[in-house]
Picture 1 (tube, rainbow, N blue to C red):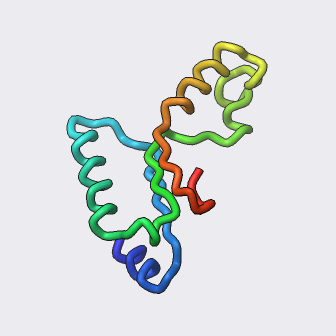
Picture 2: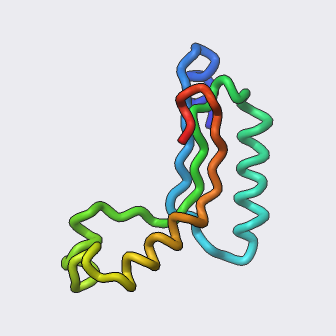
Picture 3: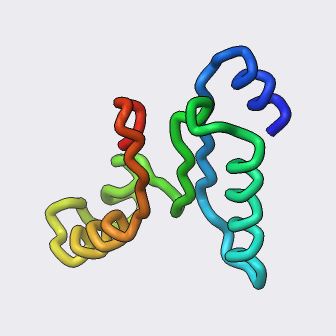
Length: 99
């Protein structure tokens, strides 16, 4: 993060994407510590977004190449994807930069 703090000190907005999150014995604690570090080292005026999430696929991978059927014409797959995306936690910044 030292490179990001140097950018932020020069007025460049920074963002952090932690994708995919890796599940292991202490994943909750470690990702929590990582988030706390971000809160200590950056102000809300310096950070555009922080995103922790699952592995993200491009459309061509979601289609037949990966799953063997065409999304979104498969309702079961579409429902699973909607559930996965609805469980995201988002913080709205109110300045046009947040989701």
